[in-house]
Length: 265
Image (cartoon, rainbow, N blue to C red; front, side, top):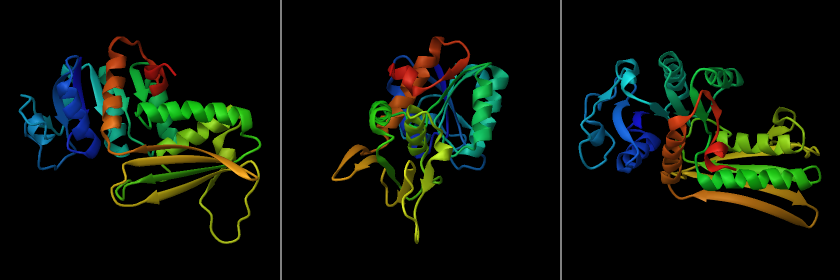
């Protein structure tokens, strides 16, 4: 499988490039950087600190190299991701997108593209996070209506969006398990006089240091509570998952796929 990585110098793109370079089922054919980056023109192996040259360049124009790939992996910015999406659609290339922070209208563009290309969107590509999502679905279905549900998510100081895409997805999964929509249940933070309204799902975001990712969901009852938590110690688990997602699309027809499809959850 021939792969292009968008943003190969970013915290995720760099790890994805390193892992893809080590896989026998993947061949890196280019990296694509935002305009003006000082590593444009470098060998992709140098730019992503792989430890050796890969013999392929980093460019700032995806359209100039897109013909040579089978799949694009994009963990860039939401602005760049929309450009990548349209080019993937134009050239009929499979796309894995792990960027977050999109509006509902922007997400609809990803779903629409799936009629023409294999499209996999994942707010979180960690295997264990997605196992946690399955547990949340089960718990919400059984006791969600009775519990006070609160979500606490923690990320590094550089993360741009809040709440995280992963925590939004967790809320959606639990709401749907209860036959509801998260837009009707979500409460974002609390300040001043704000007694808890029964049936809501609270969101709380913390940004500090270099925390890769931490998500805790609390199901509160009188006299007891259930906590389900995932902590990542670095970003490698997400990068490995992203490469697994790309490999999954190798023989897939156009459609909208998720990490749950990859993990058979």
